[in-house]
Length: 209
Image 1 (cartoon, rainbow, N blue to C red):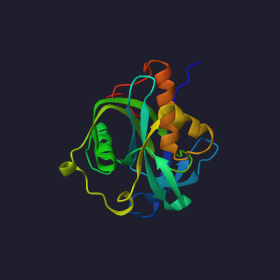
Image 2: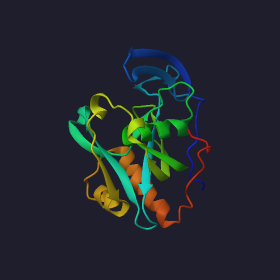
Image 3: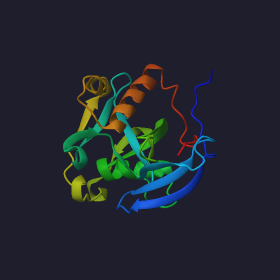
Image 4: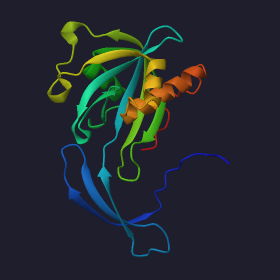
């Protein structure tokens, strides 16, 4: 048996209603015909999201790599979370890898020479259309002071920390890290490292979104 998700666009959407227009994402309702047993359609309400990218930035010698984490306040959960750099795909026509590079620059003042796809996932497929791709960024250089990004709002005061990858993995297992992209990205990076980075994919690899 081959375990592989497939995109299914054959379910007929009978009606779509925009329930709320948001600054970042919208709330929509769709009546969808899931099968012959429900000819009238079933209502599904969900967040209509543009998608996002995130970056596991690694530095250091082989076997002793450190991962970059940023500390950010997330109001819906009333918590300061350690996260990896990430951002929305909110620039029309922007290449996905370029979007990830932009976020790494804007949040961490870093550029990377080596990029690979680490993992793709849907953040909450039962209630959101958000698809997120996590890249692995290596061969890092710091942006000169005069070229650094001027941060605003909640990004203005985001402490950064370089954490040994093994310590970050332990933090995930011990329940000390909760941001989903950080959890998924850190565990995927550790898994790929133990296999000599063989599972990494090219930045041109197809992305289900």
